[in-house]
Amino acid sequence: MPHSPEDKKRAVVRLRRIKGQAEALERAVESGTDCASLLQQIAALRGAANGLMAEVLDSHLRELFGSSKGAAGHGSSHHDVEIEALMKLLRTYLK
Image (cartoon, rainbow, N blue to C red; front, side, top):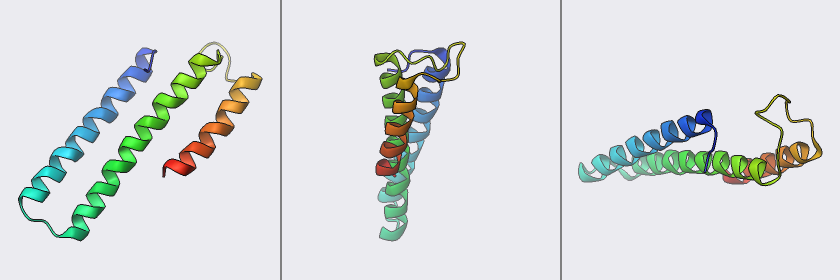
């Protein structure tokens, strides 16, 4: 769960975008859109959901390991470096 007001706002914006994509996909299916277009929309929806998952996971890890990122510092602790490396790997996997 995103905890800062900025993180919550970003999550809600992403969720609204995902909701819009899902509604557009539903309309496309109902109207008989060709499979290639549907697959493209599904891939975009999956990418948006994976992006949200990565953001929430990043927020969770930083809270769990007491990251200083978002506070006065800019993430110079050992945990921040490790979290950055892990998130880089996970974002690559989630693409």
